[in-house]
Image (cartoon, rainbow, N blue to C red; front, side):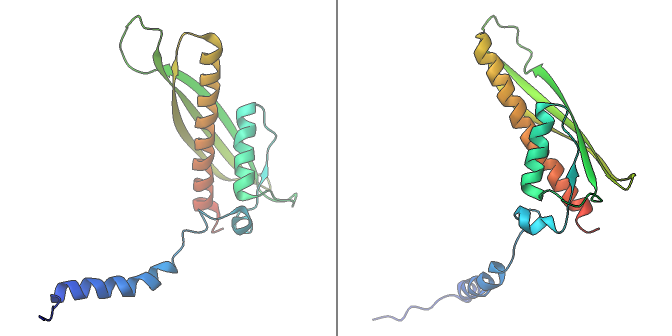
Length: 167
């Protein structure tokens, strides 16, 4: 029976993997990817009244992820959403099927005691197809708008956490 020996490089790789596992298991991606309870103390905001259904979606997403401040002196976030829709591609085929995209552009301002603390802009894109059926086309566009607005809300959340959580 022959004794099998491991090359030194293989032993080093196995040893490094065994030692790295407990060290890396202690790592986390918080607070950006943590729950509302964990980030609420780091960033407590009040939200302006929405002026559209899409702004309401943004405020609901942000309140769910960041929490809602009960202190009337807390900074107030106001978000403005603008939606544009364009056709994708340059083809002029006579098919009723056409690719479209919705662009959600958001501008936000955070004010504390009348002073602007943060401003920014973010955009997100969502695609959909028009089929020539009016009801289906309208529903597909509305779904794409909501999808783009959810994506822009997450982008705003990350930007606010990066900018304001340390203050």
